[in-house]
Image 1 (cartoon, rainbow, N blue to C red):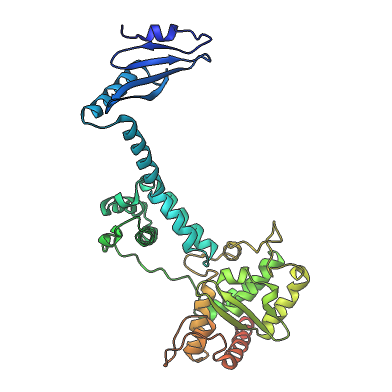
Image 2: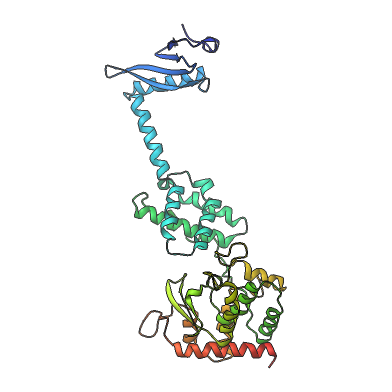
Length: 395
């Protein structure tokens, strides 16, 4: 006699497990603890076998019968339902292990080992925001070019064209990693060349006219922020290193007697030397009593064991009334120095590029050398500092 929901609900547990039979091998087993487990008994290749179909009431009578019928269809095709289930679980587990998100996170951890932490965070955030919600769970080998285009077009439609290009670029590297590790056959991103409009190259805002620079230097002198930020602001135009390198400057790398700052450039992975002008040495000396006992020259406001915030310089420029999108930004001090040193002070571009730690091979193809043109660079840095003083004084 077939089961009914009423008969199942009314079945009370006893000291021993018992069974309530439905039809075609389906039954429910009631345990002493009150659990009601669906079971299906069947024969395959002459052997009696049993599989579980779930727990009542999560699996209703109707759903249990549907699962029974699915199992019987497999039997009719000569397939063992229990082995089919094991294979399906293994396939799902394998798909999850080879999903785009899993492989992307694996790539991020391996690719960014020797790269800046901020770059890693930005790249992962793009993938988490624009790719994983739609494509993350898919096996990476199943992801198609049209699906990728649909995802990056969502970013483009948010008026973030540059972000869309960077997201696509990161995704392409994820696929290459999958190809190299045997989990995908090819990179479908290559099929999307030209699918996104070209992004407009946006140069960092910078002042390149002497009168603008003079006003900026006077404004910096009048800035009333903390000694840490104030000193960093005054040093930024003098040393014109990347903002991340300035804010993470370490006392162990600075030799005030030799007037040198040596560190490893995070972007190019090369050792770099910054000759320090008399003005730069004075500023470092002034802040040393405040932070010299710690690791970083510019200590974080809330945690002295960490460096100054990466937003501190731009935030200070904004407080001074400057637009960091169109006028000047922390990175703009580099463009400012490059332009003025060449156009106004007639410094050899090769000397300037070496001081900027750019990889500019010489005529013989030699790579960047931190000590190349060092005497010229020492003279240049002092000339530059003196020039800035003259601009500020209106000479």
